[in-house]
Image 1 (cartoon, rainbow, N blue to C red):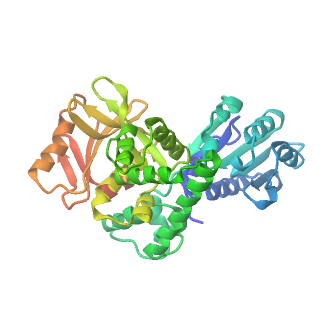
Image 2: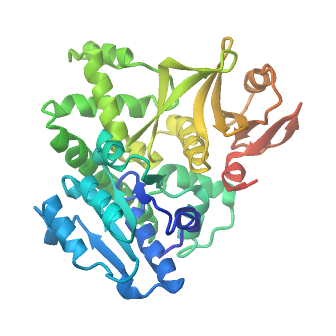
Image 3: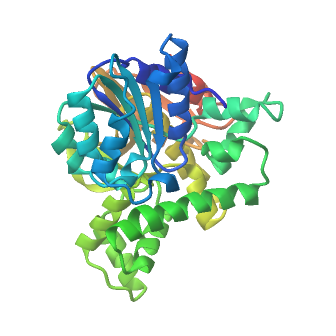
Length: 401
């Protein structure tokens, strides 16, 4: 079991606090494994093993269990004389789970940790039943730093910059880095994750009949990662293929893909007006391997996937991330965290003075002194140009400062 200490430390900071700890994220991102790590650390802190209860609720053992049955089953096993540490994995499998954990938290001395993978973990029911009583942690697929720890178990990792190539192509689902798979085998695993998410968490749960429409929208997004577009753009594209669909249906499908954690929506931010714009958003993938496992590898998509990787890394570091708009320029990312702000341009390579001028000038035009970065993958990706820091993308992904 490869350690993921950043998540464990962040979550255990809330140990014994009066909050239900909810771990969410795309399927197979490692939530269940992190839960096991939490249980192990809590036991190491001196808590008796019998005071730590875990339930894997996607097991056939609990198939068809009602919320009341779940409540009674757990209640009977709680420590009557002290605190019980309760771990509920894939809790969305129980209809009405929100009422169960709310009742347990209200009526018993428990410290509750739950995981879930689909849209029910983002529903208004959580807010309705758990108002002010929960804290949510988004679990992402492996960061580049975590990926390096995984792969060094079965091969020597010395050329970090070159290793970024493999990370772009294979992504960060932990399951495909526990051993050395051939590329086709790795993509088969990722396609299985994608298909189970689409058909279980979206199609079946939302009773979608026109599955072909949904899949075509996914393919449009995969082909347009890192580009701004609107629901109307997708609608026009489908109409050009003689498949009529209205904007509201497109929005609905995009929201369902977000709720299942397949997609991330990145809104535009007006740097001058300091407001979030409601049009021409970008969408990024939960993992770059989703693109290549579904669409096949295309060298022309690498720049967009590098941008996707930087976007996810900023989210992992706790930033709210936007596409920046300044006058007629677009800034790849404006990342904000409390009073901190950074601007980032991502470029696979800069091969001409014209490209260099475009990437740097838009950052130089910004009227404030927040840190600015140009991230690249070529041999000249280091240094400082008029206050703009140039870094290799791999170095940025590993830089914790």
